[in-house]
Length: 220
Ligand code: DX5
Ligand code: ZN
Image: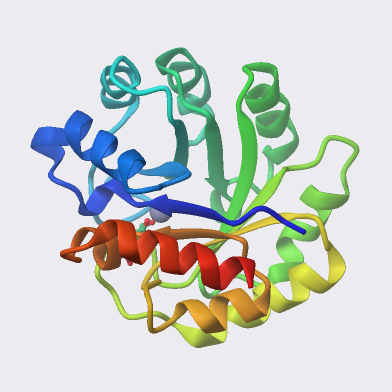
């Protein structure tokens, strides 16, 4: 049985109070904290980078699940490792030529390597990364176009989750974008076990309830 992991996306938190928002999420039962790193180039939005991860790390021992929506992920490996990142998930669309080197570097710096696909990217593109001698340890299937929180879930993206779960029964499969109480059933039945949720958790009056329900549905 795969472990259910609920990872609130801190993009939906109050960035001016990041440390207390992180603490609040952990108290509410979050397993990981999902950190969206955007460069204003790979996606049309600009968020945070290694300096903010470094500051947050001083306030929490939590697993920091970093999602790199950047054109040059390689440039961020060393700074993020030094800053205290736990997971490093890069996008395949910008890593077709250097994923082997990237995975090697991420692992050698003690982080968990993951690969992500945008909604339009075919799932076959990540097979070589899972079948390599030095494989990635998680696949993040984007269920919205990356860039912003609060977007509408794209159900057709779950076909990729089904294919991955069938082929790789013990793989950590993460879904990200538009997940909440109305979309979790579909994501969980497709086979996702790591759930990123931003607006549905931070927009709730009772985030602990949302987190526990998401977790329960993934586990059942
Ligand atoms: C989007 C980010 C997501 C986003 C999720 O590009 O990768 O992590 O913050 O937010 P919701 O759950 O509101 O779609
Ligand atoms: Zn994300």
